[in-house]
Length: 463
Image (cartoon, rainbow, N blue to C red; front, side):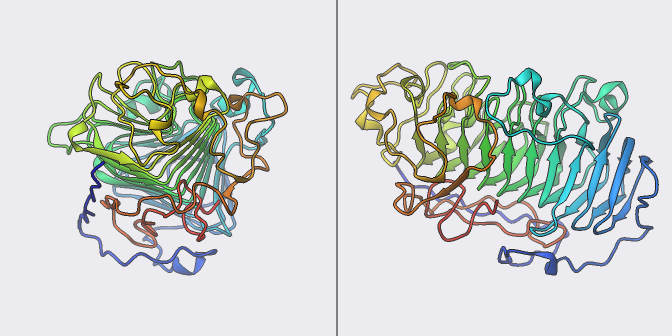
């Protein structure tokens, strides 16, 4: 495999870029900014209609009906804010939304009275994570920036309805946790947690993105991808953790590319996917990483544990395989049915790489062709990643796909893990957003020497 280094692109569009700051245990000291003009947001009564200004540290706000951040307006949320959403409401962003949680004071969007259920084996139909209690955060085509740092977003996924849907050029039945759709805007998601949903967790129809060090639990519901980007989206996804996904954790497609928009180009590295593809039928969809329909980019250093389908490069419609590079990716299987889908059948052209773990030549036939069946017996329950606290093979009578929450598990690496030191650090992130403690990415963490999102040097995912 030829090693290709993809250059960093810095797009300067009126913002001042600073160097990458060190990711600290508590970043509250970096949020030194001048409050925008306009009054602070009152917490005295439920919010409805237009809002702007600043939500203040430590306060709890209630949203009582759909709220709108209008064109030219900004809502800044200081650290330690709780936002309770009632009446299946949504947050429609036509201007800018900036949530500045920190490690010690995260922000939370949730539904009052609901709690997460981490018990294994809950049927999808009876799990409150997949009910869709509020409409989520909905970016209009005019949304200039959506920046979410150290922010919890729980229990979203309600249908947009006949008012909010058409207001953002979507159908009434659309039900994403987060929507962003401005090719000239910035979507930044850092160090955040998303829980639940009914369809795609995050849909980027077009835009410049930075999706780093986040955790996704029980996302996708009965039929959605998790971070699903479409035509005209460029940027990087790295150090994300996924568990219990419906379909793909990270998906890139150039479908729907608008006139004048760039080709979808996404760099992905050092993410971890556990028990992915709860709703996947092998041969039809993916459950980890998926490139299709003209998308280009790169994916390296990723970890897939008991996912129904392995890393997926689609040839119908074909990804831009002339400009797609990958390698140094790892997979583990409890069972033969999983091992037999490391290289899935169907319309795919995923090429085995000599840098992958387990070594593809140890179980694929010498004359293996893309999409052909094979016998994965040699790699069943082989090369255990040695997580700090997660049983492999899965025990207590559960199948992997009945475990969709982190609970008390710890997916950091023990000393001696075969994932330590096996990463490729030559690939470069595609940086297309400002680097700034408030109005941009806090840190662009470079690829790690260890596979997956948790690094033994303390970098990477901080959850």
